[in-house]
Amino acid sequence: MIELRKNSLDFLCCPNCHGDLTLNNEGTNVDEVTSGSLLCQECKKEYKIERGIPDFVLPEYLNEKDKKWMLEYDSMARSYDLLMTLIIPTLSIGLEPFERYKWTKKLQIKSESHVLDVSTGTGKNLPLISRQIGSNGKIAAMDISNGMLNYAQMKMKRRKWKNIELHRANASYLPYKNNTFDAVMHVGGINTFGQRKKALHEMTRVAKTNAKIIIIDEGLAPEKQKTLLGKFQLRTNRLYFCQPPTKLIPHNTKNVQVTWKSDPFWPHYIMELQKT
Image 1 (tube, rainbow, N blue to C red):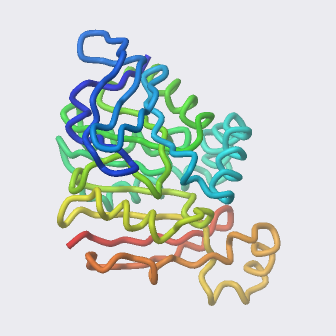
Image 2 (image 1 turned 90 degrees about the vertical axis):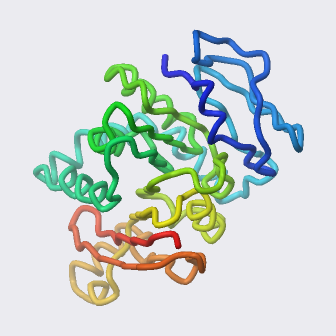
């Protein structure tokens, strides 16, 4: 079992009001929490903990678009994990894992860094980040889908990772204190978020000053959309019409860069920025 650790209360907070949390009715093993709940000392909202994963999703703030995708990811978790861990790496002849490795290098993290993986899915980024931060670093990996988190937890258990925690949360209402993370990463998902602007503000809020924020999602460069291959790709996936949400980026950022990758299997953009 991968449990919530008691010292995580140093960086966790209520996603509703950002108030401090306290443990309530905890099932513990030394400094690890497997069940019970977290209670906000300000607004008194309570967040259940099951199998070591606290659930910070606020149903009243879950819009229809996010709910639709949450349920879809819950139902496709098994096939998604197979696609991401076996099929795509095989079809890309190893290029996809190498590209993902290059994304994590852009975070400019080092040993002992504290990293947030937003919408972690089944945890594809976690081993790459973990290698860079070492045993003294920490990773908070969150996702809105219970199904996805179940597969991520199974992987963590097999690899016996002790410095990664899983949290169920909405990317637009993150359960983390201001200025917590040395780097923030998000791969695949922001195109479908119901509140993209708020999610970007949240990722920036929880990042430390000068922390790198890397956002990757599907999208076809405008000049590629007019090519024969581009037109075919757009017919296969309407999300390839999506463009990087640069106009929604908070003002307290700098060094914004966008790179396009015309991958035949998954054309995408890489948006990089830093918190000021």
